[in-house]
Image (cartoon, rainbow, N blue to C red; front, side, top):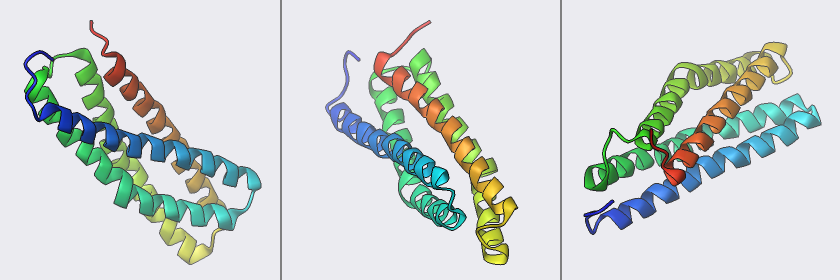
Length: 156
């Protein structure tokens, strides 16, 4: 980090705040989702899934984009894209992007339509919601690995 520019600390602040919002939001959603799942109330679970979709597109995804932009500028300022922890961070972001675009987004949209057509109690709706939570738990695990890499900065 020798020779980091004056802007680096501001970028670091923005990067860390974005990570707090993204990962902290994911942790909170998992805790709440688990509690609602255990209550065995399909309507409540479907409503919660709708709130998760809203929060994901309007808060979590924008914070992830901010993290990426700030991180890229920090690497350009003081680090290298060849560092293992930078590669892990970019890989985690890429995983999240692809999972969101290919799995979570389409499944969430399909589930919302099914809820309108069949109701929250429909077995396919409930199965889709459980899949969404499972996939998001896997993503959260990967994000935790990324946070570890960003703070510990392992090398080969």
